[in-house]
Image (cartoon, rainbow, N blue to C red; front, side, top):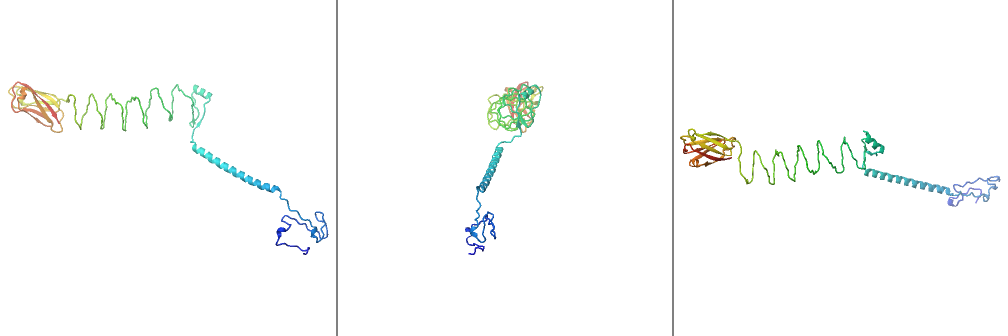
Length: 335
């Protein structure tokens, strides 16, 4: 091996004492001293000092550790912030939003309220009274009144209108006028002191008791049970005497279109024929049924009969009645 030639080691570079950080000082060609004070002879490589590798100090390792720690702390802070943001968002979603804020009343404010007429707070604020409140004067509420609990009123309640959406229980109600648009159910007794006017149809599933029942038209689909007298009222019909009463004779009627009595007083020489014609105060829609009953022996001996129409009926006889006699006939007229 020629020591003057530069040796290359292509097969074992790892065994070389030189590294990327090794600095080789050039040797002096004329035997001049080197930078470390030793004299290098020209061509004597054995006397050259071997440079020391740089020390691997702990400073570089600590810098790497610090970087990892800082990254971990940064990730921990970000995760904590995200979790806190979600928790706050959930709390806000669970808590109902309120557009009003609460404000307390100090003792001086309460004293001011007692002495003067002042306004406290704004419309967006809420006045909370923790204890009971007694208002000695009138209370005016300009907007809506929401009551979460029960309302007890010791005196009269005056309302221009009331709307109840649910069921209501009323002990006693005095109303000048009441209009019910839906179905009305009365579980107890309904007493109408001034009368009951019904414009539509009415259905009674139970008994109906009335001291007096006035109706323009009564339709009964079942049996009619009467436990007392039947009184047929109405206007008195008109009467026209016939020729069968004789000279100076007369006739009169009492009762109504439904029932009544005809009294006949014969005069002189009564002939056969009709004693009287009774005209109804209100005409029937069809020819009614007329039933007559003779009163007294004078009427019983006559061969009597009736002529009838929708407007009147006549009481007649086939034979002449006795002169100067009084007798009569009862009648019942049914449609």
